[in-house]
Amino acid sequence: MSSEDSYFLELIQKYLDKRITATEEEELYHLMTLEESRLDLYLYLTQQNQSLKNRPITLDSLFESSKKKYKTTDSTASERKEKRNTLLSSKNYQRLLIAASVLIMISFGGFYLFQHILPGRIIKLTSAKGERKHFKLEDGTEIWLNSGSQLEYDVKYGLSNRDVTLSGEAYFKVTKNKKLPFHVNAYGNTIEVLGTQFNVQAYAEEQKMETTLFEGKVNLKVKDKGYVREFIMHPGEKIEVANSLATGMHIRKSNLVKESTEGGANFSQINHENTELSEALWTKNKLVFQDDPIDIMSRKIERWYNKTIRIENKNILNQSYTGVFQEKTAREVLDILIKTGANLHYKEQRDTIILY
Image (cartoon, rainbow, N blue to C red; front, side):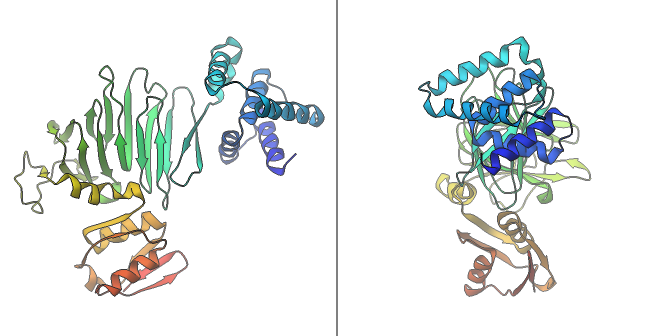
């Protein structure tokens, strides 16, 4: 038995003895996503509520039998799913409903992500700094999460609702369902769609929310001083809404866009091809600066490469940067900016980059 399998069994023992830590529980669920035989053993043990103490030989036999079953069986994926659904519907699995279930998703890099579902709680999909991940929900809706982002939804998603809450940035490709509209909630604003493709940026530190529509039609509902303003968006349109954590969500009028404003929101018509280049290239693993001031550029680099950036030279705060990068390190990005004329210097101290 491998050391990973042994560790998995050790974690199950702790889980059944109710002495597992939160971190160890996360590791337990993660190990179950790597081999279906582990999930099978977990289902059996939680059903029987068996302790693993003083039963190493029996347990090893059970585990090896489970692994062989998944290597030799000719059953299809749909049959396995039907079997699992039957188990979950059994009265004998009341404990399992309280324990957990596993959801496997594929990330950009081909790694596997797990999430566990607890009754009365929400499912959290996350993408840490330095990561970009892709998820496919049960209704077929696809979601790309940018660095430092989190998406939440409850266990009734796809049954009684299709509501998600976003913190960070995400690109959505929503499966059509006229009976259950898809809702994205971000800092009090709501985006309602039936089926479409759009990008939402709502990082707390940016204090604004940007919605860009690529395909279909959405209804953006913005809370403004106790009232709700609605904006019907069409492909190629982008709306920016200010997000002040101190005074609450409100619509901000912007002078950066030449087109007219509506209801105080920054409402602009943009070329669809340009929109893809500027707003969706991050889903293709490309870092984009769009005339970004150095503070915004720095935060993008921090999230993208999981670095900390400190600006020591206040004279460079009025500089702006534009470009598309697919470099592997933050150092390479900064070197290119400097070579193309940016009045910028930097030095590194471990995971911190100092701009001066």
